[in-house]
Image (cartoon, rainbow, N blue to C red; front, side, top):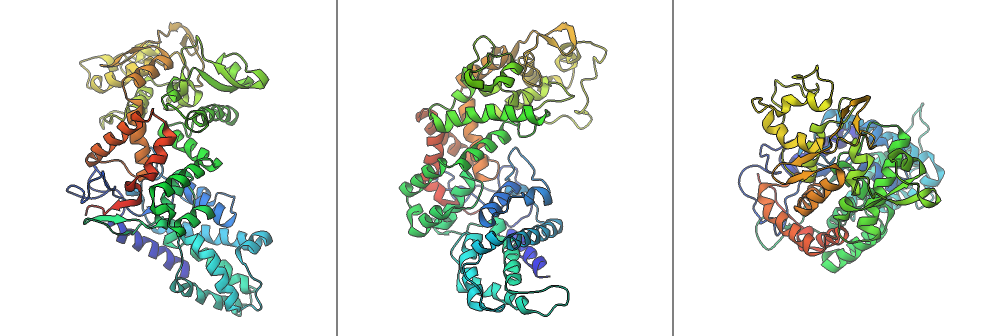
Length: 542
């Protein structure tokens, strides 16, 4: 009953903080009707954000040494739109509460059954099963990290009744002091302040504007850069007031970007954004693709900071011997390293197997799906959904007797067809990538059909023609799509929701700043964290 009560508290906190559960009626943003109370250039709206599966697993790892990824095992998968952290669609349900209860009980039990982890949790040796002072010492050490803020005597007192279970007579369970500790750990895992990022803030200079405190800012920084709780250094910076200043936030952001956790988070951001977090290949090939793409992201963003557009225009790639052979590239010196793309039609990340495998369909490449990827993920345009009477899970039907794929897609090009309007915007893009198969290998004809020669010419209607990933990347970069879309996608990820119509001026300002800074993505992230708007929030529209 205790655990279910905690879960119901979490649900009530979510309702109280956001005024809603699930998707807002206003598709433009997190709140309902009317313009925001505060200019988005000053502060952005935010609500209570439940930790994603990845964030909860990372937090339990850093808080308790839990390395079994229990959230991924026991909780329903997050919905990706394309990111996993959209708080406007998070649902607080009885099923979630029940699953969290099971998770919390398992994690707490494992932590207390491990002598090393138990010793790290409890900084004292209990003199008896009912040693209240030692229990308080444990809570004083554990709760500030679990709740990610300083705790009050009232916080401690709320957990003290659990000590009664340490000496409770029970014919089945041999209770002792650590029984109470285990219950406290389990309860804390279900505490709304661990499960949610709840930002209150204090009233700012105008109505609706709230200034965040150091610990709320620390949580923002840590979950943005690391997808986990703050470390001791960030907690210390929050406590000292350093995070109240732009210079203090800048210093911490730079320190944290040097940590391996930042690389993992950058990899996750790009995998979700560009749609390659799950691709249909063997584990060995997927791992090779991911090493290649991660190496490029690391180089462009962190190791050799400079123009982010190199992510799309880089003329070499990172491969081992097996992946080089797979692509038909020269093998690298030493068995692993950077090799030239010269003469292959590839460039940057669009030449990688990760991207070329993303948005596939029917066990083959899909010109339509590849075009949708480019339009939605790299140009940040909306592509209408198919009409309800169209089964998008079936290949084009109008020319099913045709042998070659290009001919089978003729229905999409027929201007008398209701499909032509939308497909004319996406299919020509996809056909410009057809020379590269679902595994990223170059091909001259349809798979298994040497008579179906692939021309490989594509077009972004109204922008220009291209052939292959290299020329497509060049078009996107030269026409200022990639940088503007990267900013919008990053802000969607940082805010935990889609950006709104009201935030168009904010996106434009950030894009211009990104361009003025030579498209340095690392500097852009640091500048965003250092900005005053990062340390504030605007009240949500009701």
